Image (tube, rainbow, N blue to C red; front, side, top):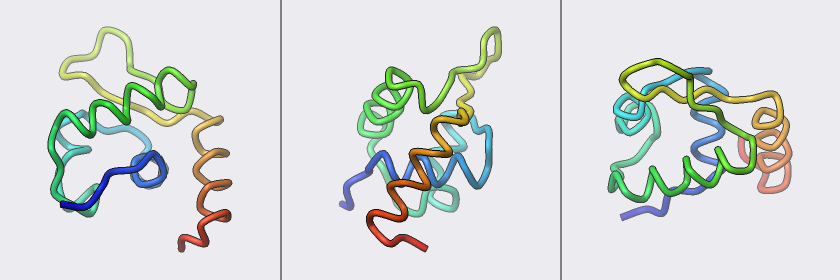
Length: 83
């Protein structure tokens, strides 16, 4: 099974801006089949670093990219030459 990375999650949120956890985990959005715990771990890391936010008072849990997350996603894409 492919490994989920912060870059993959950031690029997905850059493309979609805001997604629920379930929508983010869909193969057509993230580009791979995931184990839910792996995705949650990356989202927690990105949230702790200020790259994604959890929308307050929204159910189901919904994630959105921050300006810092867009900058970091662009930086990582350039570093790893992702198109």
